[in-house]
Length: 82
Image 1: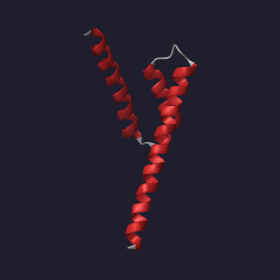
Image 2: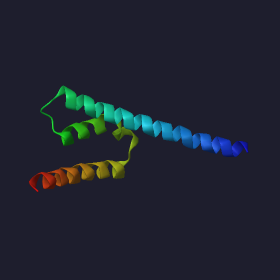
Image 3: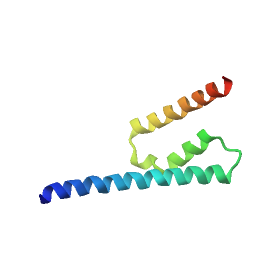
Image 4: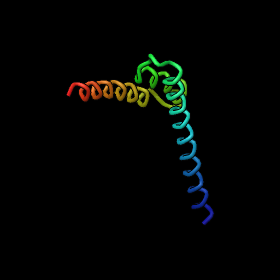
């Protein structure tokens, strides 16, 4: 019974760490958007990612984030044109 609880606790701890990092990213993104009204969402998100989450990710995750930003820009442009 004890090993099961310890394993479960480890997963809960990891989930809390991930959520705290995500909240730090969101808070930094919102701060950047508030402080500079001229900054684009993509630029603010990219800088917030670099400042908060980049240090925890490898090159694959960082590349995926960059691709997601580019795809989101294209998707938003498509929505605005239609």
